[in-house]
Amino acid sequence: MTSPSDPSRAAASPAALPDTDTVLARIADVLATRLPANGGDPASSYVAKLFSKGPDAALKKVGEEATELVMAVKDGAPDRIVAETADLWFHCLVVLTEHGIRPEQVLAELARREGVSGLAEKASRNKA
Image (cartoon, rainbow, N blue to C red; front, side, top):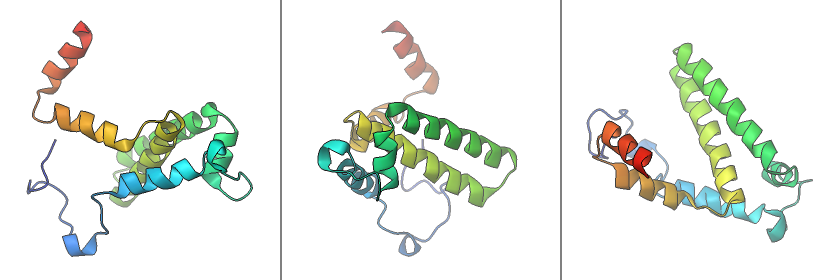
């Protein structure tokens, strides 16, 4: 994983980027308002419509978006890779919301793994 100061990160000027530090949390907050228990209206919201169809609808979208990302990578299309990754992450956030999981929990897990060898981390999961 790279750190925020890692020069290998994409060279986009910070002034050109929107506030990205909390974007996942902000999206999760909006998604929570679309849950049926919170009055999400399937007639007026794409996400509420997904929720109304049950968990398989969002899971299907995750699979579709993952496949589209793979194809964009295979085509070597950077703009499509970014767009498809955003679509995949969005639908992953929908799934997390359905399960009452916040993106901060996923970010904390990534932070926990930061600096740990991928091989060592995987081996530790196999022992559990």
